Amino acid sequence: NAGVMQNPRHLVRRRGQEARLRCSPMKGHSHVYWYRQLPEEGLKFMVYLQKENIIDESGMPKERFSAEFPKEGPSILRIQQVVRGDSAAYFCASSRRGLSNGYTFGSGTRLTVV
Amino acid sequence: SQQGEEDPQALSIQEGENATMNCSYKTSINNLQWYRQNSGRGLVHLILIRSNEREKHSGRLRVTLDTSKKSSSLLITASRAADTASYFCATDGFTGANSKLTFGKGITLSVRP
Image (cartoon, rainbow over all chains, first blue to last red; front, side, top):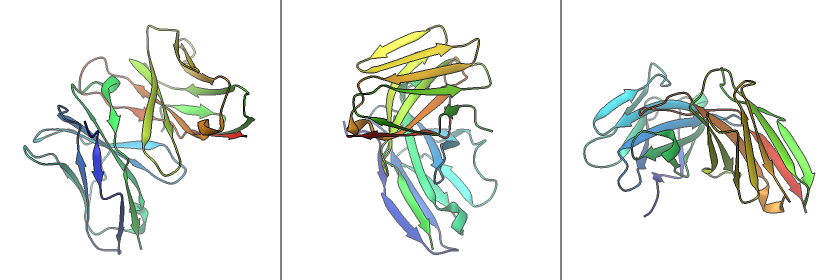
């Protein structure tokens, strides 16, 4: 059981480019959560997805950010036209039944916008 | 605003001493969890305490929960240099599925060898 896999570990993008972050949940987990961590801050909830459905996107910025969790393949967090303020660590967690006592976090993707 | 607020923001102790970290929250919870994050790494789940529990132990960790004061504490006994990390409390206000965690800003613990 490889745990929650996120890639890439580090991503550098120039302002205006697109960033695509991938998250493969643990085997048997169908619930995925994305969190963002700014420097010296805690994690902020962004979006909660189940296979092919967005359950809660209350933490997602209104523009430029989107997320999906297709029937096959990893969950993708997409940031279009990145700006310096998007630089952060993005963490993905998965759970089996959508209960918080079953969270497993990935190691994160550290996005740097230059 | 943050649901969980940890206190202190930073703590420096000598190896072998106990470390106590506190967390306060604002709204009703189903459970409260503590996580550790080593520099540049992901979060590791340490311990979960449910709203109907008052105290829980796991190895050198002891967590308490006071729902009347909306606060929790994490005690690490006989600290080691390897305990140096950031510690976060997280709360879950839902009783069923479709839950999500709300994290505090974290406490930076430094254990001097």
